[in-house]
Amino acid sequence: MTRVLVLGGSWFLGRSIVDAALATGADVTTFRRGKSGEDATGVRTIRGDRTDPADLRRLAAEGPWDAVLDTSGFVPREELAVARALEPVAARYVFVSTVSVYEGWPTEPLTDESPVLDAPSSAGPDYGFDGDPGPSVYGFTKAGCERAVNEVFGVERAVSLRPGVILGPREYVGRLPWWLRRVERGGLVLAPGRPERSIQPVDVRDVASFALHAVGANLSGSFNLTGSGNETMEDLLHACRQAVGSDAVFEWVTDEKWLVSQGVAQWTELPLWRTYSGAWDVASSRAREAGFTTRPLVETAVDTWRWLQSGDAAVSHERAGEQGIDPAKETKILSAWEKQKR
View 1 (tube, rainbow, N blue to C red):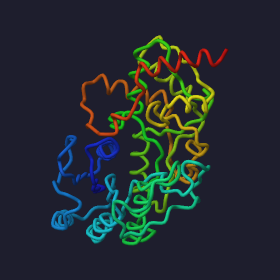
View 2: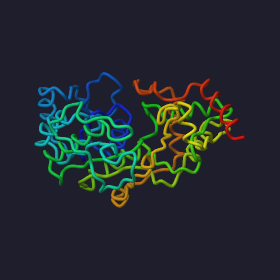
View 3: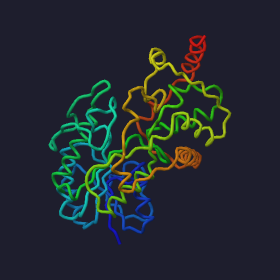
View 4: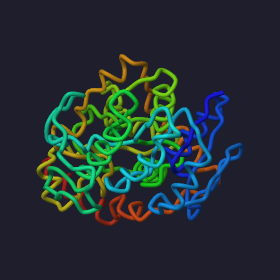
């Protein structure tokens, strides 16, 4: 029986990894503070703080494990301490990173071989800088975390997963939930950009499945995890309409420069809308060759809507408040767009 340790395990991706691991019959341990989310049934939970050396020593004493799956690392020097504590009792370390580690994100097309931001494994939480729209502190620090894991476990025992935007049940940022609720209200919906624009969100369950596949297949190295690119923004909004069963009509505001001029914040006021050419141009060739598969957007939308209707409480997160345009502002922009088209 495979023994896995999940750092986190109660939120979005962490919980999906736990569920997927349990479904394979694995022996699952989670390490978490217990301040948010709920413990999954069927796992052994160890309470502790990953920044506390005593808690890490206590955790290591509960090993060994075939793999650590880390969904909660953000500060390089803290990641370095976690990796050092667990290296003697873990055969493999799977770290969940992000496409934001790339120098060219989100302005350039990216592949698995694209240059990564330079950050030392000793860096603190504020390392790097926030560009507009270039690199971010988040990207720098995630890159530093990757380096920390590689330094301790070596390239043959370390895996870095670099997902793009993750959607699906239990999503706490609220991007897809906002679109689902907006489409549920019906009426004329402001749809941003060209309907045929390719987008690449990935379902949380597909990321979780590949994380476990990386363990079972003894994979190593880094892997981009993004959607196929064969679906569009129009596909996403139609999937939302199908999921909620509404009569919403989409008004596509195709002049993106004009839309920006109206003061609409990209990525948040109209979630998943971004004008930069590289935002949805990230190849996941290496992962797909290794067995990564993705489901259609409509399945993600339907299952997320079902979760929203289930009463299963989402984890409260400060970023959820950023999502979505004010209804009055949306109406005003739609009215102005009608005049703009004439």
